[in-house]
Image (cartoon, rainbow over all chains, first blue to last red):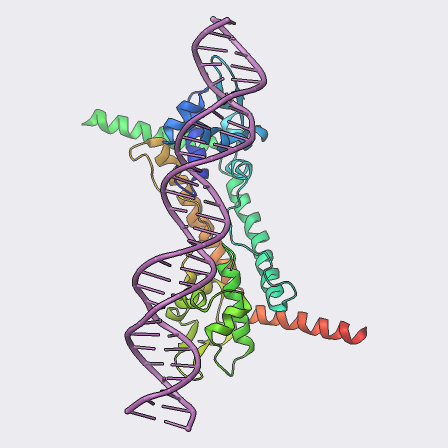
Length: 149
Length: 149
DNA sequence: CGATTCGTAACTAACTAAGTTACATGAGAC
DNA sequence: GTCTCATGTAACTTAGTTAGTTACGAATCG
């Protein structure tokens, strides 16, 4: 799994899970989809379990399944559950007491707050169901064109 | 200079430059403000020179100055000139041919495009002059409160 | 009980970005 | 003209982050 692709990789995994709602997928299988290691998968989506987006079970027939219907899982929730901000620029003070720095940080923090609100708003309108629908559309297109040829 | 603080550090530097419009500041001085190395400063703001945001001159009395008035320099330009995206999540394909991945990437790229447009729009309304005004307000406040005490 | 699968800690490897050194280039002081 | 100061830039080092890996305990089911 490439760096900075946790969101994209996680969505990939979740669409596969949405596409196989009747059975649990193992970390091993999920890892195969994104060409990585089962442990990396478990570590990456651990936060989604705590958020109720997915459930996991152990032992025979165990693995991962969606915690609720795909149309009730938004990208905003997924992104938040991954625990990484979309806007990773730092505004930590490095020169405590410097008024210039304080002014810069104040303005940037304001901007970040507003930006995160905006982004979350946009992401909350995209659901996992939208992604699976997009996938099925692509799948049908290929099928049709293959048939036509 | 801390990681991911290039935007904040650059703004810090630029406010100092705006505050001393009558002379050029050396990389050495600028580096002092953000506790780093002159070479790091030159490297970081090299892009700003190409964008006309700052000018640099060599030799005696040389150094860095703003390329135009602070109220005509927006944070959007600065951010763009730094050459780093505000939204660094990756959408590079890792499994070419996988339709699930293609659907995920398509949706994320759409989102990114819209998000970048929104963020740039917000940033284009904040100028370096706003930052220096904020700084001066803080400066005056300290002065007043010191006087009061 | 034995096979399977997750949970998690601990370690390794790869990658990124800041920091540093070194030196060439250009510009003004004298 | 040359001395000094300052940028421009390449090359290397160091530090920090994150993915990848190994190992093993815990839970579940046949």
